[in-house]
Image (cartoon, rainbow, N blue to C red):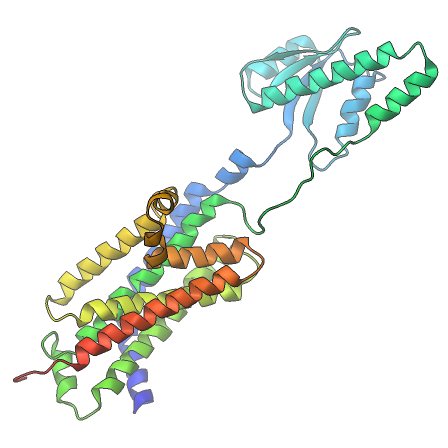
Length: 376
């Protein structure tokens, strides 16, 4: 009997336009817009690129030419140089094709730049360092033994800073929007969870009245309705996450199976939220749908979907909100999974989602099972 009800509940949900539009089509369209808006911003703002520079007056046999050619052997050279004359270098600087012009002479390197920024600072630091090293070598040229020692010391690659990455995974902070987008999809599952409650109560829908007249146990009927929606949301979450990962190329890390698990449990949480709200005896489906949509978007706003700094500000002032906000918990589970190598924090977020789901389902069952009707 339970499997029979489950089959027809799944068929009924698949005919619902809410499922197709709000849980599949709309998130994919929104995710595509997010990808178009945020694509490449992190790389441009945070990842290092070689600084383009023009070099004037540098003979091919000069030490400067050897130094610049040696830089090209590294994976990410400090400078991307172009050897040219003064007139051509001025044109390149005016057109923005280079960040500065390095003039080589017997005395020292001089620099001409058109602005003030990080690239200009890098060029100045390079020229200052080269001039300082050239003066040291020139001062030691009178003593061959001293010159050899000084030259050897300057050629050493001295490591004064030990590089240690504090976290692992994708460091692109714009991917947080896609974590929150997954949370929004999960909470939109409340729209189909709402129908599980509305269709089981005689005073809220005609289908509910027919079910209440049936000799079939109400608990099994509601349980089959919820299970069908849990399965359907899990499938929708897998489809949308797969679209984000394989089509839009959003980096969710190398543990995609756990990402699917987190999204599926988040979808169950969304369905449970709709079930609990739908069990309340007042208001029609339109009113409750509006309430759920508004609440879901508000929770996503607090989680950072519309403002990436909102969750951080809430964490500083009222951290309990982030711990109780379903959208924040879902997004944090994906963040922990992608950034940290161990799964301790990820498991904590999953347990929190399961506890919230169980509590909401229990509330819904208590409200629906205690209701009696004088007539149908």
